[in-house]
Amino acid sequence: MLTGINKITIQLTVFAILLAGNAAVAGDSIDRANTGVPDGASVFLTYCAGCHGFDGFAAYRSAPSFSMGDRLQKSDTELLQSVLRGKGAMPSWEDKLPITMLTSAIQYLRIMNRRLIDGQPPRQLTLPGYYFRFRPADAAGPDWWMTQEE
Image (tube, rainbow, N blue to C red; front, top):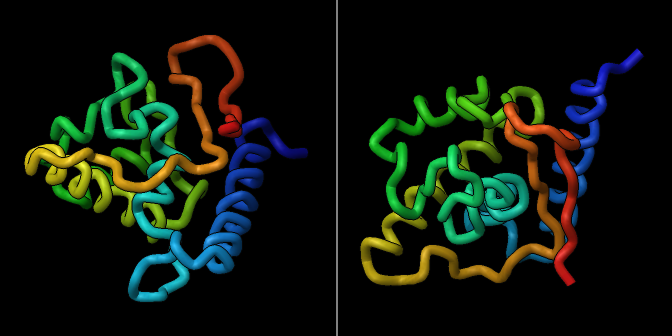
């Protein structure tokens, strides 16, 4: 019997596989090195921006605003560990998305911050057709939901 967390893990894993497959067809969401891994912007906008903001300005009070440089003094390894283990209201992402996707999203955080410092908009891509929002660990309501842009 699957628990709620296992069901969510399976659903997110299947979605990540589908996203990677759709990105390969679309062509513009695959990184320039053609490794088959969706680029950091696509990963961030689909899985992270629902809480951390599409332009890197947090949607929740307890979430860091990466465009402003929040927590970016930490190494990529430290940030990855926070993502994998969960931190504060953010749930653990361990076994939900491949490490390569999480790492590419972390690299994108630094790009958004650099763009803001350089006087550019943090996000240069259009918003995805769908994205996930996750309930902070200390809030009531569904654990996650998918939102579709119209």
